Length: 151
Image 1 (cartoon, rainbow, N blue to C red):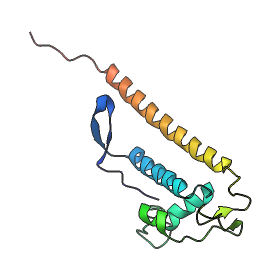
Image 2: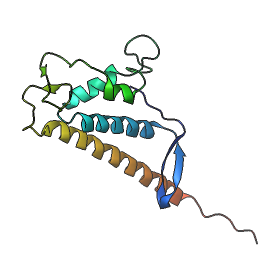
Image 3: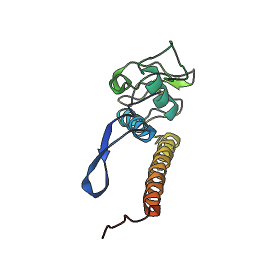
C-alpha cells in the first residue's frame, strides 16, 4: 500500500510547521487511516482493518498487488464507507452498530484486546522511530564545527 510521502506539511518544534518528504510521513497517514477505521468500527479485528485498507486501495501499475505500489494508493473515504466482505471463513456479522464484520467471539463484551494491543504497539513503534530520527538529526547537527567568524 502506498500513501502520499512528498511535500507533506506537518507540525515541527517550537510551534512551527515543516514540509517533509519520506516514508515517515506516509506511515503516519496509513496509521491514522487505521485508527479512523477502528474508531468507526470498534469491534473490527486488526486483520479486517488491514484488509479494509488494502481492499479499497486505488490500484496502480499492473493489476493486483505489485512490488511498486503494493495493493495501491490508500483511499480513506472508501475504506470508511465501502461494503468490504470479510477475510476468510472465521468472520461473522458484527453486533448492531459495531461495524460491518467482526471475528468469531468478538462482540459487545469483548474489548478487542489483541487488536487494541496491536494498534498500540504500532503507534509506539512509529513514535520510537520518529524520536530516533530526530535524535540522530540533532546529533549530526551537534557534530558540525562552529561557523568561522571573519575578523
